[in-house]
Length: 316
Ligand code: NAD
Ligand code: UDP
Image 1 (cartoon, rainbow, N blue to C red):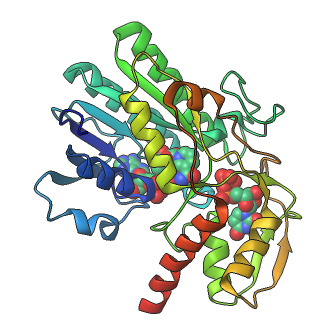
Image 2 (spheres, rainbow, N blue to C red):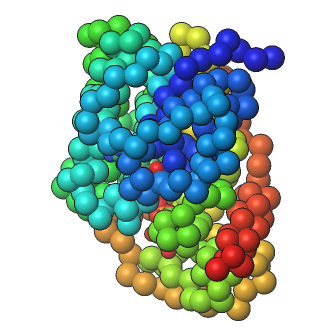
């Protein structure tokens, strides 16, 4: 059944997750405004939506304030790949912090409900495994990942302060590594890197010995979790959204090679500084509060993602 039509704003709407979210919101009958500065997002991601009369696109940087009448704000604007967020770290902090202030200020002014896309990176290199929402994290405040990790932590702080101080209706989700079609081929994150290398029969680069673990969530599962969270009653979060299946990065490389029938070799490289050793979400809270858990196993999600990149590479 359709919930009442909402006027929604999706910042980062031309990005990987944002474009899927826009598509899903339109399918649910909502009006969608995608706002993006196209740093890592692209018009290509949302081209199919441009003909929909319920969809609008605004080129705008969240670092600057904006006034729009909306009911729901999904604040996703922020580069998510280490390669991209480290390209201009000062800008990354500004995007997270000033972006959150501007979007929370907007939510306050027009009385919108706002959902902040936070991240598993707020747990840093975690001493608690799997990670539960009540764990405060182990984050280096001065390292190369800090612009992203600390930026997102301050964004969470702002969300809670606007809620306590100004009664803004807020939600926080902590997203764990999510993958799928529409990731940029040069995005730099592990799943797209490995698939593109494997399809081209080029070397697959492992940072460290590949024993570090991640938990990979397929994009459709994540979008379902985001919508359930936005529609939940009396639940602010933060809530972990991710797939609890845990794999080493070496296992991921081997799976990708097998599924693509690739001749690629795995090449070890120096470990990245502050690269978390283990990461896996405890999703008990999401199960209990949202009745949510991922449905797509890694192999199935990888196959869909491989098919997407295969098509993209054929296009040239
Ligand atoms: P992405 O890089 O594909 O998308 C980010 C989008 O935000 C892009 O379209 C980019 O152009 C836009 N953007 C960046 N800075 C902006 C600014 N200053 N003003 C306006 N737009 C700006 O990344 P994604 O994977 O789609 O991530 C979306 C959100 O989810 C991010 O906030 C990210 O931190 C969060 N997240 C993602 C993952 C994941 O695994 N995909 C994990 C944890 C958190
Ligand atoms: N990684 C890798 N090779 C790559 C890209 C990433 O070995 O080409 C590793 C990286 O060091 C990390 C994991 O894969 O341990 C996940 O990296 P990603 O950049 O996708 O996201 P992170 O979880 O580190 O933010």
